[in-house]
Amino acid sequence: MDKSVPAWLADAVFYEIYPQSFADSNGDGIGDLEGIRQRLDHVQSLGCNVVWLNPCFDSPFGDAGYDVRDYRKIAPRYGTHADMKRLLRDLHRRGMRLCLDFVPGHTSVEHPWFQASCKPTPNKYSNWYIWTDSVWTGAPGFSTVNAFSDRDGQYVTNFFWFQPALNYGFAKPDPAQPWQLPTTHPDVLAMKQEMRDIMRFWLDLGVDGFRVDMAPSLVKGDTDGAAMNAHWGEIRVWMREHYPNAMLLAEWSDPAKAIPAGFHVDFMIHCGTPAYNSLFRAEKQRTCFPWSEGVTSFFDASGNGDITIFLKHWQAAYARTRELGYISLPTGNHDITRLSIGRSEADLKVALAFLFTMPGVPTLYYGDEIGMKYLPGLTSKEGGFGRTGARNPMQWGEGRNAGFSSAAPSKLYLPVDTDPERPTVAAQENDPDSLLNFVRALLSLRRGQSALGNLGGFDLLHGKTGSSALLYLRKNGKQRVLVALNPAAKPAAATFPAKAVNALGENLFGRQLKLKKTAAGWQVTLPPRSFAVHAVA
Ligand code: BGC
Image (cartoon, rainbow, N blue to C red):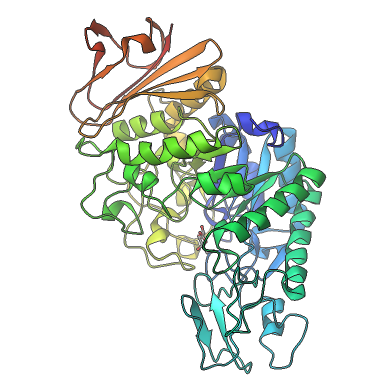
């Protein structure tokens, strides 16, 4: 691994917390930093050691905090700067780390920079956002808003209308559109400097890194990616010099681009590529962003999925990046349905056995450790729309609001799942077969076997169109581990080359495999919905 990648990433396991919904310490119906601090035992017991917090900064919360009003202020509903310091102190005492969500591409329309930028008279902030030069002129290829203020122009938005794009310039400004500034324009550079100072502000407080929202989309019209590479390359060099232990984690969903551009880790997720969706969220009801009607997820009991959609993409990205950084395949996140949708506990165990035995940094979305359900049909909250059902309160135990909050149920940020069968941490705690204890055992196995670790190598043994079996070797030095998975509700046969494995060793997790040597190589039949992890010689 490249020496400039923080060494701690070799053992990192991320835990994503949507702060609104994790733990409410003051009974106002919404989660807060102190609530998170009080639940660190739980996070640590899972084997997770890095908390990624969705934006916790001052915001009008039109998009759950991805519309920042003040990058340096903790949103009062989550607590104070002192609460953030306490959380950091306790995480660090435990040998854990904190990753904040950095939203460099846009602010809220309520941000003072944007308010100043809206003024018709030129000022320091006029060019900090992308404005066309007339209220009647749009920006082809971009969403714009017109007549928002007295300024004669339309502003470019990045996501919702109230998230105006900060101005990183255009890779190739069109001379016929003089409002398109070059990336070297002094106002662009001034804005970038301010964003860097914001990173510095949090890093100086002790934060261990940032997840960067919409990382590839800052410079506009950057068709070949050169301008974005240059931007993240500069940030990486600056971080290496001043904060060599801090991590840059991308929301890019294309590790083969994000990691060479300068990120240490990239999520391979639902946006951008079909790879992740083809594993878990191919069907319309399993994702909030329909992409491929007619395709079945590989991790589906029907056994009709096609693992090669994922493998083709992931193997290419892995080969390109394995010496430079890490790919993260998350169990889910705040933008998509829950992994549990349409899956039984047995199905979930096979999916998790895959996610936690792959190379790269694993990411667990809060609640997935107990199989929390996606709640369909909730009224949208804070720009959640279809995402809302994956953002409801964590289910800790029995008692009021499943232990999330002491507030009256009508005061909660989002309703708690009312299903009497809903999973809870307390109910799963003492059940050795629970999903919770399965996650703990699997992550502890991963930590104990370097071959299964973030840096361990990967060789595909069996993964083909038309087969629900997936077999691979993980390896580190002499240690080699075989992983075999079958998500289908029927048995699956697989064959792999005899030379790949001399003999099966100890069964480390899941089923005991039986290999049969034939002229075609090793043959194995995997039982329905099964997983096996074996040492091999
Ligand atoms: C975040 C979303 C957010 C959007 C706009 C994303 O990709 O994950 O939750 O709505 O960026 O900031």
